[in-house]
Image (cartoon, rainbow, N blue to C red; front, side, top):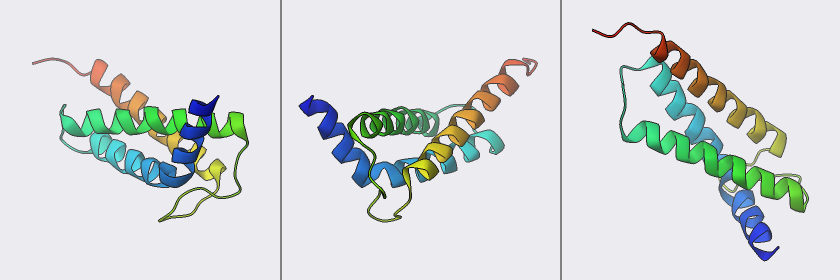
Length: 101
């Protein structure tokens, strides 16, 4: 249970940055000319850790505000992570249906 509280504490401090970074990086991946690379790995890692931190905050009790640099509500962070997952899935579908040359 202490690990859950530890993840919740980390999430209250950095989930604002993870949410913003994951949306910006997936937007770049979706509309940019990148086919693969470190940006895709960082985007996926940010989404996975952000969702893990959000889930741990939900299980331990959501705070009213999260984030240090850009304070936001946990619901806004959930929406940003959802948008990021949607853009990742959209990119995957578009890349899957693209003809190979």
